[in-house]
Image (cartoon, rainbow, N blue to C red; front, side, top):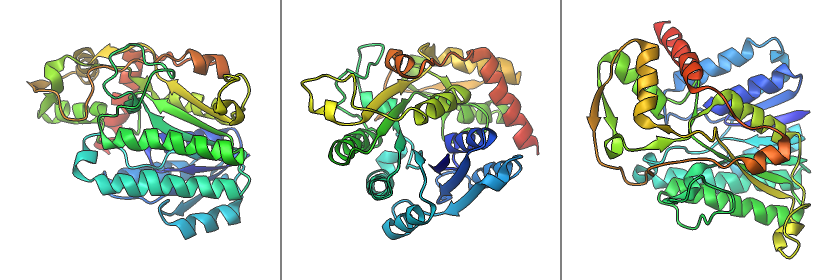
Length: 334
């Protein structure tokens, strides 16, 4: 299969690209290499991809998805069969500082991807949504059937908008689309703006860790290997209009939304303790109030995903935290 992976130099996009190459797919990797975080890490990921034994099947294109004409020309030239759309402006707190970046990437860019898929007969579009769409939902675990009309950050609002936009294209043009609501992804080659990376950096450098809501938070930490497994299994099973409510307009659309999380929320302080144990150093913590746009707990109900693809994330936190810290110390010791 020829697969276009947007955000290929990003955390999840890197791992998806490597896994697709390992099974023999041709991968068109797209990324704009912006400086939201250290570009050197993005470039290092690309270098790892180029070392892959099947690297001849990887073609990298530096391109911004908000560039309508350039993206259209890329699709027209490459004619991908499947698209894994992971490029986006990420980060809840950053959306309070730079909202226009989210509009350009997550709304304009997503529209461009939908249009390109529509006009090039893409067989399946799999795209990244987020657990943040659940907003301040206090009912646990989070289910795809829950109301998600009350986002508490612009980032979350753009991800909910993506789901609505995808449904429209699925309904109007019979474009198979599947959105995956990711729950706190961590692992080797992770993003420096996410808590595992920030905590590890602070612990090793002796800096203070800011712990919000005075540590009274829970997150459904999900290991990267489980995320990638879910993405690729979903990619291989295009959404259909079957088995939806017969009296719903959604039944006419090849459209799916799934949670993908470990379904075992961990206390934030326990996660920090695992990092401390793996790194052999105790963190200095500063307990702070809840931050705007943040939520107290996340917890994924993944029954629908398991029913659809026969897979349920289940990685062991202690083991996988060690995988992350081993990579982190090796990478930065270089």
